[in-house]
Image 1: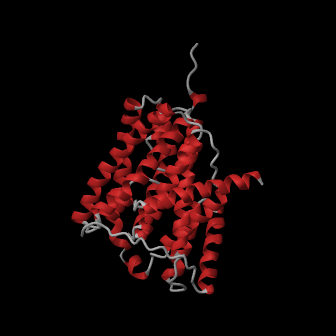
Image 2 (image 1 turned 180 degrees about the horizontal axis):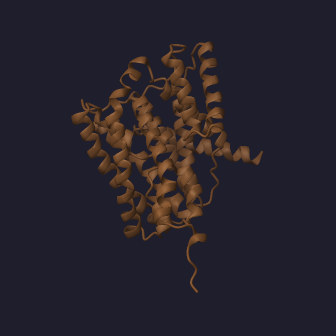
Image 3 (image 1 turned 120 degrees about the vertical axis):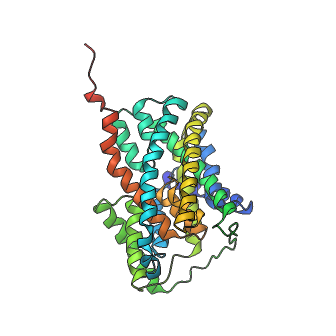
Length: 353
């Protein structure tokens, strides 16, 4: 019962912060407000846990929304994305190399912690693999948490300001509290959500809670079984839940630790955004891909989070989700292969005689 109270308190704090963010007209105000209202609580020792079952459902709901973008017209254009996917692959090579320099020189992190801190995504797997190579879990969590927080604040601002290439984006501030959708569509999307999460976990899909529902939603929308997407209210709830979940990275941290994480995470974010902007400009110039969509598809801010931003800002969620999924797959494929070449596992390190 006490745990339920803590979950409810977290959501209330996040919802109030999100409301302030919305009233201040901040891009993705519900998410940013929820995040900024719960992080200070976590820092001073107030427990603000997120119910991970609810988070999984909300991430799955984001997947349903992103999957709804996979219409026949979009799928028929997927072949045009080969060059932008190749760009993501090149981006994933450049970013860790520069990130290592920042983590080692600026952050003074040890080699194992620096290697996993510089990785462009795959946070859950990084927090599992990192300790096996002697990485500092607290430092990893703080660097990636700070990078995620900074990206979630800055990227929506940049995208709203820059726009799609035809001027700034005008955000729709109307809140639709109606849940009107045919029962048949609720049943179809609900089945995609449940089967997608369970099936995705069982076959170990990358980002299974999002990817499973996304794939099934893409199938039912492509074949015309439904044209519906979860109501707008679900987008707001998803923003609040995702925003409050970021606070976990800052639990019981000191100001000094946070400033250190900000220095490294902020440095990584500046580099990530700078290089992503160059690639996005190239996408816009040579591939006719809007700058905002290209930027959002490249920035390593998390598959659920970036998909949610694309949905909330009315960008091409199919394009953004597919490119982030490709990035996560690349990281998960090559990180376990490349890291051991540079950082031996502790047990394999020769002991002094």
